[in-house]
Length: 454
Ligand code: TYD
Ligand code: MG
Image 1: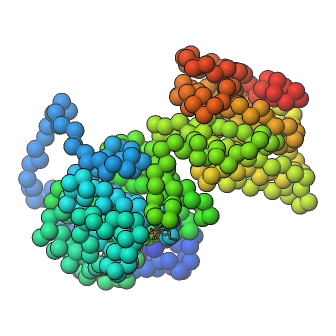
Image 2: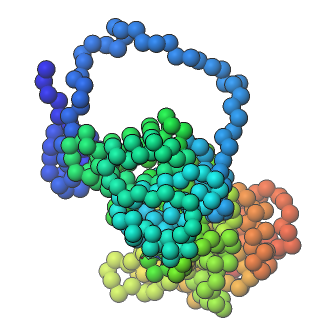
Image 3: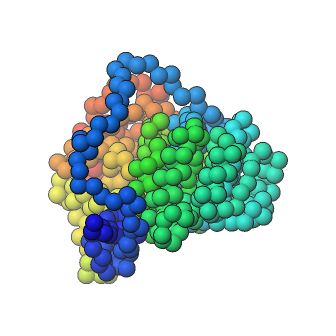
């Protein structure tokens, strides 16, 4: 029988059948490595030649009771999980090294253990003494969490099998080592094998497992994307270095809404919850200044107000700069093009900088109108009134499109002391909750009215 060899890229997880210096899928150099050989030889015989067992089929009406969830009491975490931890679920928590994953999970472990779940925390990165020191700093030394420092997967599985915890936390999946796979810890084959072993073990034994994964520079959980497919829930822990805010974002969740966020603040004694993120994101805002506007956004199920800041200045370069932090660069290019083509406001020869204050990443198209307003306000050097929020999507024709959850956005704005909202015409009529609502059908009308120019 011919030996079949396959190769994987350690950066993106793509598979090929020959080695090369550069990965065709992601373009990275020196990332292709040989996979461990498959133990069972490939068979040419069709599966249909030998009868398997019949599967039990059911109809759609089968009533399953919703799984009993365990709440950690950390509201920001429970909401992102979809309302608490589901038994026998597998969760991946990804994030940059140093962002606070171990801190978050040690705090979560203590809370879940306090809520009655038997919890084991396995650290493959730090010695038990180090984890205990962190626990001391976090004031968690009395929490009934069992601690282990180990990287050998076989030993870990044996321990979990005897101890029978309801929750196991593995920090991190990149340090785990399966002795039946012939490659170094952290390689694609090892990460894939370890994640597979742990998630299938968890499902079989009815234990929940939380895997920690480091993210590479390219923003992928290091090694294979395949881990994301094996788990029920994928959470990313994000934040800007130099900012104390940390955002836990659900990017996939079989047991709840994706796109939900939880907001935390890193303090000297661990992560504390931020129950009113709008107040936090607007806290550094001073008097109204040109280029600064407030967007009434929605993240997951919760309205969040954020400040967009723009700076527009004559460019000394032959090609003007477009720099964006916290929003999509190609969406910015689109809005600049619409302002130029539909409203006759050119940005050629001008450098444009756009920033979302507080380190939040906004992905809603509903932010279009706020972005356009920030750009115009910066370009015209004219501040918008302090008490105004904006939201609305802009189409290529220059029309303003209504967006969902108007009432929620208005309510949040009013709660934070705003009195006026600028929004697209149409949309679901509902209570404005005492807010003055100024509506425009297209961008030209908005520009003419607010900036008195065209
Ligand atoms: P850590 O949880 O080790 O990050 P990760 O597991 O994602 O690599 O946290 C790293 C940073 O958090 C570290 O630079 C110190 C800081 N930190 C605090 O500011 N306060 C604290 O209470 C703790 C435990 C850590
Ligand atoms: Mg860590």
